[in-house]
Length: 84
Image (tube, rainbow, N blue to C red):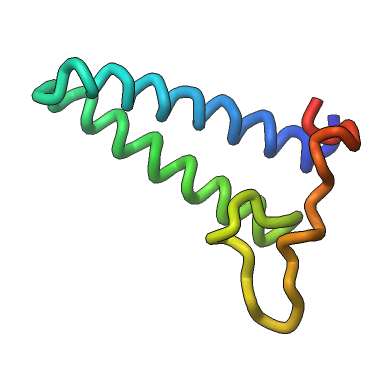
């Protein structure tokens, strides 16, 4: 597994955690401990996505930098085997 694939895998793990915490908070909105975990992991996820976008390609449209070149279309498509 190369660095890019490892970063995508790690982002997927943290993203799963954030989604699960959000689902838990939907039914337990006053759980302060869960809210702290959510905020912590959401910050980590955002930082990981920014780092990946800076070194490889943007993962979301909001991370596509409009500097010298339009980079949104540079990402490989799922059927190209990169997202396995």
